[in-house]
Image (cartoon, rainbow, N blue to C red; front, side, top):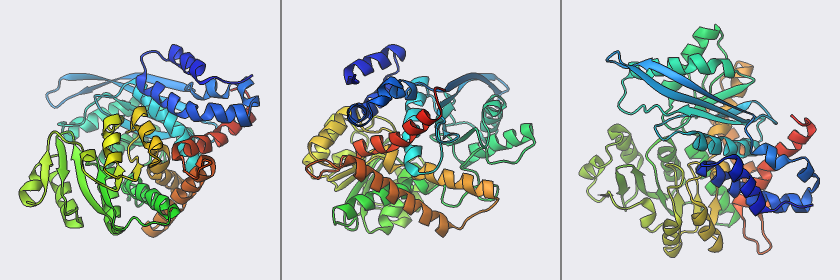
Length: 444
């Protein structure tokens, strides 16, 4: 008996109709896992490991009612997808965005299972959020929404059950409001959320972790090629924490970052961003066009993506499916040698095929952007021990975790011609620990 990829995807599609993002994630993972299971673990077929791992253990959907500053009633929808707890408590961020729906959260939770497994920290996978849009809202409106959201969510989470964190639209401010409401309801100061402020249970380097970890992974990729990141030109998409801190770390490593972007367009600075320029970008926030008023050598484009500019390394750090097949072909034709995902699934399936065909070093988000959840896991460890570690200690542990993830990807992704298929390595490397844990715990 053996598994068939097309038959399995048909099964997944029938069980999850109209969930394109989730089905895309399932196909990306199982395309590598099915040959591996057929060859190495045919006994896992009867145990229905794949059928079980794509089915969330629990999905909570709830109403979030709150008052805006005009005392008008607002109604949003809240979600928590508790995907898999075979190796530890559910762990994954909360996303507040009008684009949030069940398909996106299931895809994020599914990817989180493998990402968390790769870190080596005992964490399961989950994800949650709401279709609430924090943009344009006052601090008081965001506080009232967060308090209403947590008033329902609190009964489903806990420091050893499910530990949410931040994601798009949820930063330290939102985590603070959510944590305050949980503490008020439970009368309990516990590490139920990560991404907390450094004075109230948070970890140093948590805001920087995903961006820094991304560059540490890229550094491993280049060291494996006997090359250096120093001197390379990098195109980055996004203008949030991941993009900014990836840029900062790239500068420290001696690389030149020439693009950043948001929904308004793309900044191209051929001279490269500096720490001074980054500070100004943080000051102007979303108003990226202001950058070119100060720095005249730069240009702002409303009709061009970062991938339209020649680079050695491309780091998509914005959102899912932002880099398509045409973008991938353009990167390849212009000599790009490495693409590493700072966002979750920012490359389409067609784009990934272009990278693999061209033998470009492609590092998927579940491996390359695992630095964020890694430091969240370290924050949990500090909370359990009642300690707060120094920035240097956290940074050292982050480097070690990213290096170990790279080793896992190489171990399971090295092909006969020597090419490292990092996606395959991450999928198989992240899956093994979860599958063996599920088998050990019985049919639950």
